[in-house]
Amino acid sequence: MNRKELVNAVAAHTGLEPRDVDKALRGTTEVIEAVAAKGEQVTIAGFAKFARVDRPARMARNPATGAPVKVKASKKAKITVLKGFKDAVMSPSAAPKLARGVWPPVAAKVASATKAPAAKRASAAKNAVVAPPRTAAAQGPSRTAPARARRPAAKATATRTSAATPKRAATPRPTAAKR
Image (cartoon, rainbow, N blue to C red; front, side, top):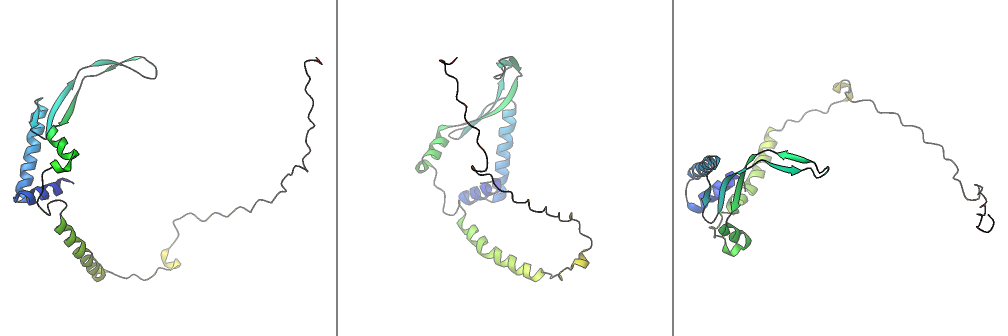
C-alpha cells in the first residue's frame, strides 16, 4: 500500500474527503519528524514510538586484522513497534475491522479492470497510423556492424583409441629387499 492508497482507504473508512485525510497525514508526519529531530520521543499509544538515538564514539575491532578502529559518534532514527500493533499484525482477529470495500478496494479495481482496457483499445485504434513497410533502400545505410564470416569447421581428427596409443610398460618398483 502506498501513500495514495492509504489516503483513499482512510477516507473510505472514516467518511472524510481524501484531501482532508492527506492534509492530516502530512501534518502528522511533519510533526513527528520535527519533534524527533529535536531529540524528543513521540509515542502513539498502541502503535509505535519514534525517537532519535545518539550513539557515542567507540572503539571497535576490524574482524579481518584484529586492529582497533575508531567509530565516530552518530545519530540514528529509531522506530519501536508497540504491543497493540504487534498483536493486531500477529493475530488478524485482533486487528480493527474495516468497512467493506475499504481494503482491498473491490469496486474501484473491478470498475477500472473492466472499463480501462476497452477505452484504451478504442482510443488506440482511433489514433493508430499505419506506416508503409520500409524497404532496404529506404532504410539507408545500416548502422549495425556487418555480420562476421563464420570460420570453417575444424577438420575432424581421428580420436585416439587405446589400441592406437602405445602404453608405457610399467616398471617394477624396487622393494626394500633389493636395495
